[in-house]
Image (tube, rainbow, N blue to C red; front, side, top):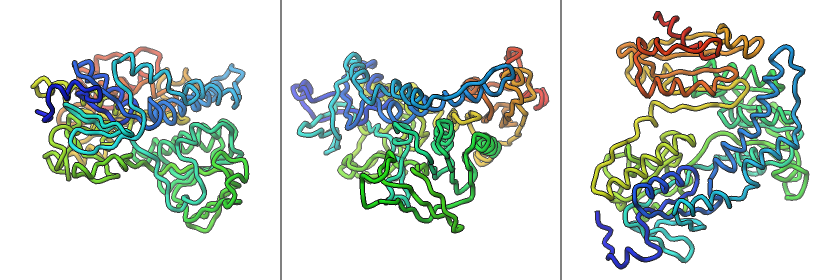
Length: 488
């Protein structure tokens, strides 16, 4: 695989084996794995090193949610006097986890890892070439796109300066009222967080909550949010939005500026709130990357093979102009929009580039992003899932058996919280007698999901899994109850 450059050109200061566009967790891991494989790497970032997860997603959102969970847990055990939130201190603790939205530490990590950092927007200008400002970087081996996603703002909200997930996780004051549009993970988590901090929250969803998961999960979360004081409305659509004082950018005290927002619903009802959060989905951050110079569509998701190498037009071959040098890892390839899956793909991608540079085919390819994706929704109660839902398993051609069990019937759950309410659902491929999916909803289930991930990824036969004895009395005893319910 020759780049067409001379050896002398290869020694130039702006030439590297690998150039990564995007310094979030995915990009950082791609570059680090490439360096570990003996290659040189540069990384290009237009915002903060550490990306969405560090400053506007995983870390700040969980910093906001954990105190609410602690208070809920304290209130669920008789004999505990209870606990209360101190919003100012919760927000200050959140700021510690984002390092005040400064990336000195992460940039320092890149330096220690021998990864060169270039700040500014990166644009592909041709084969293995990326321009950053007045500098043209050239890659001997690969260019990797790891730019992630951005929040989608519906047209109906475009004129009212709504919050997106970024404002929802970085706001420095609790709004008096907050309307959230969207019943997915972001909408449900932020409803839990801001309600606990004292905002009057209205959650508006066109369908059931968490509709990509089995129905019981969304139902339990809806019940939990309502008990926490959230006005949860499903089956509703926002048709129009207006903000008081919208002509004055300095009006009001909301984080997004302006006065109260009025949302008109499909049935004619209205919801008024100080702020509105758009939580209806994500779009790829691929505009302005120069994809059109290599035969790809600007603003599109990037289709990749199992080593994260870009394919064109949905076919098996590489896109026109990309040859074998363009890769895309993480959310931008739309395989699994979760930080931990982006890091997993990054390890595969960096190792694949290093292997090919050494004349070998990659030893490890992506085996998880389609059917072994774990996730935790940090609502009250928590939801944790891995693998396929019953419907997904049937669509994939499996002969499916579904096993359900009430987690509250486990002794360890009753000790964990008085009146513990939770549910577990196991999806079994009957022909192979292995678990292909498992979903749990209830307090504390997020810390149990990795056991299910191992069972699904390892394709552990149920007859062998039966010998993995859960400790008593823990919530994990639900594993034994699921297997007994199955018939073992």
